[in-house]
Amino acid sequence: MKNLFVISIKDIQYLAQKKIRRKLTIEEIEQVQKGLEFGLECWEEVASAAIEEIAGNKDSKTKH
Image (cartoon, rainbow, N blue to C red; front, top):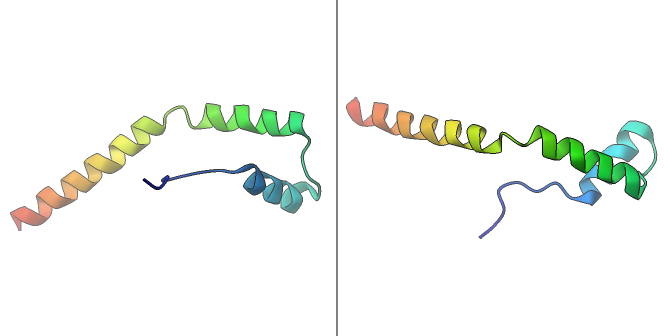
């Protein structure tokens, strides 16, 4: 099965180059990882809302 969402170190380094014009150190990448983990703690709620929206859209289409 293919992943739905992946953020690679390559992606982070690309963004760092773009934003601060240099690559990050290992320690800085670890800090970014902690921030991402904190920001994505509620991924289940977001995915559940998306699934419920899909189910709601299908229900409303069958009623018309």
